[in-house]
Length: 116
Image (cartoon, rainbow, N blue to C red; front, side, top):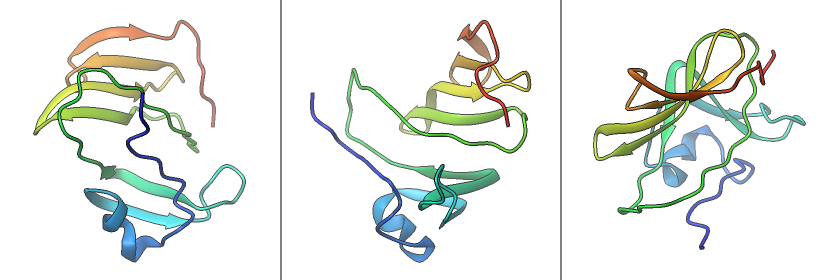
């Protein structure tokens, strides 16, 4: 297994965000990390995206922090422009995985795993 992409957001600022990410919208770099280190902050309608060549199996990891429990997509995997699966924070603090966007639920944690 090979690491294809890793980002701690400590080596650049908001003006350089698209040098590391394929695209972004309403995202900023600042002291948003868990220990006041650099991190990416996206508004409710914001995102950062990274494109890869076709890969059949891969592992994704991230740190996530929220100030409120609102339904929001944490990670969405796309094939071209088509959503394949999404990791979503639910309003009850549970994490859910959907096929596509939020249409077909594949699974959900049985208890709340995130609190603001």
